[in-house]
Length: 290
Image (cartoon, rainbow, N blue to C red; front, side, top):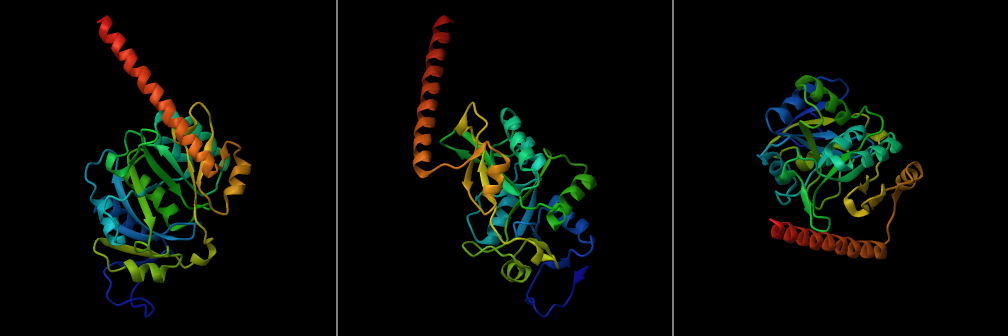
């Protein structure tokens, strides 16, 4: 239901406020991010933070939504923003040769919430991904912050898929923490709305009355980049309280010390250097043979 005059919220606001007690907010938010290219503020799930979300179509050349959300947060307009996608669908957003590896780990982790850095699939626009100079691949953080499937983002995702008949590879919901740049991420609606509710381009804000039920911890970030070429190993990049449980569920997940990262980086550079040299030699031989 829509909220009108709440004395606990600032007066000078532009975004209309809904609560998630009923589902009447879904068509408004869906239209805002799919059709109107605006952003919305919603609760992101068990990770315990509110997020600003927007929508991007596969192959889309216009990066205006990315720039809009970054402006609202007060940071560099080109800053990368994660794709929010349920765990079982994460493999389809990775480069095809890595999907089996990623499928194994997300299956093992069941309903844990986490982020995963993957080599980006072809449908993800270049401006929405980052180029990893070490591994020489386009990478993308895909993330899901909910276990139970009943938070606002978890309800919005299938609603958009069904209403607009869009597949995982066709349309991406991007999201980032609902706070101003260098400010603490907001676990509660009021501080998030006070910071961002009057930002230009923010269409709607959805307050979750049950926001206390979510944990207030960060999301563990894993990496499936080709740093363990030929193996199924997944590395912990940023750790939260759930990391130990995740490692217990999926033996292919491992931590790496700073010394280990240094050794690894040197070995990857050496391996890529050898491959580049072999490629040049092969090219030279082919050229001579021609």
